[in-house]
Length: 390
Image (tube, rainbow, N blue to C red; front, top):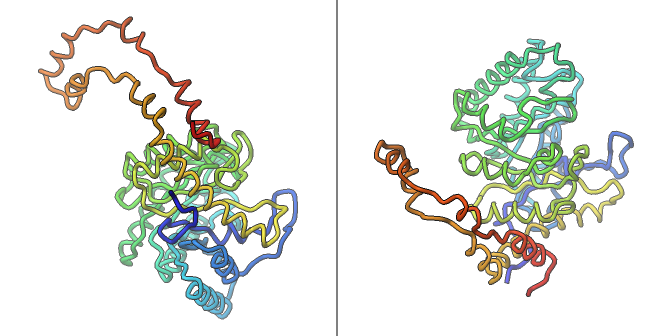
């Protein structure tokens, strides 16, 4: 029997910008008071079971803060972390809010903007290192275009590459513990964002000077916005050894970036994501990058955070139930697998393997007639998710 109470061992995290979101949206002003970073940490301590709290540089320190203000904020935040036992596993930098980044940061046509973006990121790395962060996420929210005539995309990606190469070297030179995680998104706030999917990021990583330092931070909503299967994106990252971090939330397909509570919109997708992470023993942070509803008050924000973690724990239990279910096991065992000796020919190429493969005779009609009970498998999966035991 799985306990649904989250603990630090679950490595659940939230961001200052998630539970601290004041309910603002593109069409309306805030609906609840803004919280100082220390207040967000104390709220997460009240939630219970949270491992850590993450931040953008300007979530913690306002972009125009003076030294005295920054020092006071950091002092209060450190005190709150000590009181709650929270750590800071991940940090990132905001290269999208300030007007200076209106046409990109690392990929801007303006060399002054590009230099400022790298400088700002260096300072964010310094700030995160003070709190012991080991993951640095890079989301290029303004790295893109609405007007294709305005940028050469080859040169834009070269600029992107040079910036990340520089920052990897900066991290290494300062002996920081960072692994850098690229975060993909297809659109919003730009019409078209460079590196729009996790697959794009994985391909890009292999062109970098230090690909061993760079992985991905896929987000449910960002793949679902484009109608893609997030479960498959995460599988690709796992298979490449590049799943450095993950953002858990939910999203109706084809909508704007909703940042819904994890599992609240597409339960079957969430189930198979949890199954994938559990089956492949993912041990990194599980970050809930989502917002409480605009209608929420403080108590509802606490309920939102608790619900995010509880849904993951419930789905863990469902995964165990699914894996042990006799009917699921029978249906999985019935899937035809063919002659396993044929796989041995495909492990590696040799002239002998090619000759033996060329000599095989396959009865296509017989193979095609083998039954696949996928309707029954999907139905039984749905029944388990709906709580039907037999």
